Image 1 (tube, rainbow, N blue to C red):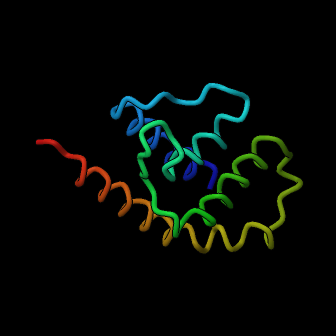
Image 2: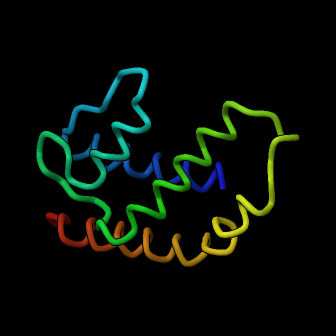
Length: 107
């Protein structure tokens, strides 16, 4: 799940770089980048639709947890829904990426 979120974040970064959007460079840059993904950026570019925002917020929280905790602190009951919804969430994110790229393809 950590790799999933990092992968989504990497695609978002590539899109923003390609669009000339300045990327965050502060201590909370992951959270700032997350908000930018939903249109809160200098060019009002909305890469991912708001209907998936709360789910992605959960993966961002998991990413933060994993980076700042020990594996002995993992609890299945807190991870279960994220694991079960991963494939469905990816399908929505992938569709959002494809729609964004398709609508911004200048060739």
